[in-house]
Length: 443
Picture (cartoon, rainbow, N blue to C red):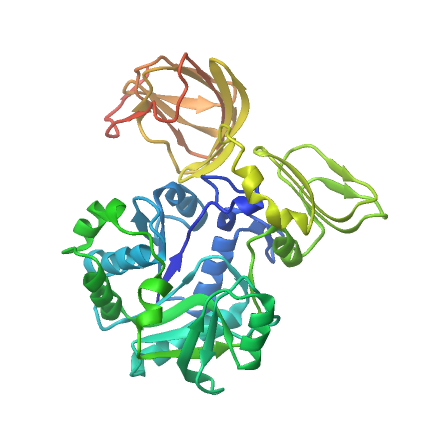
């Protein structure tokens, strides 16, 4: 199975756990059998592999998410990187060109395309596999998966099939309606449009070339910023005459708000949290290393992270986005391909950060022009390279990097350092990368 996962947006409705560099699909909130926590993207990837261990998975995403994907899924997963956001049709066109030109996927092969962040069980991915198999023999150009609705929702578009068979030709599409209209659609046998479809790769490429002037993957990538923002539904699906829909009646949830996320949590709290016996329908997610105490609360969600603290009525939490849009501050936590960092303190001309590197990983070899840096190793062991000289690094060691001097750190075990940046202009843009050097050992 060739499957493309669409990994979009920043997910500001789940602030303070999500931000511009950490989308909702990377938040670790789902408990695994071994008692650890995994994110939506880890859960979906694991479920795909459990159904088809040979599945070829490609994630279509922005460059800001690449580090988090490598951190959580490893280096082997395919990634189609969008230079900027241009909605789902350009993203799918770019991913199709990536598969064909970079990965060598033949035009006649079937590809299944779906969002990366549904809350589903194994039967959903079994249905995706069947969707792909049906698309391989169907005369239709597109085969959609329609979700059997559980209530008249105004949040989703609707697909109205021509019949009640498991696979049916599509009669008409309906945009997000009022709840009253949604009820009318459901009475006509309508299905939720979950943004899931299967087709031959060549079909997507053909429609992409009809709507966008480009020669190959690199040409499309280079002109991506000039493309019109438009969804795949508007650009392709609603204009396709030869289209079918397959019903899916299993569990399917779109976890886009605190209310829906709380419904998916297996326990009332994650992290250090205490709820007294007067609390009802209260959920807490605490990423800080301090306790959160809740007493006598009802229908409330509490979330604490390095980005901020949210205390909200569950219904009101759905209206969080315009308030979060007004918050402008330094990103306080981010996952990188090599590990993660958490900002501890920000002053006018200094910043203190706790850096965690995973065993076997390293930072880029780089320098800064506007700031000095000091690393203090607090856990693990590894090596530093400063201006071409390699040294061992262990707990208690202090390493100084003046402005302009290339440096990196390599983790032989899990490695934690406190990084202090000092300078008049501390910025993420003040970074110059170099080729990894040939080193000399310190005598």
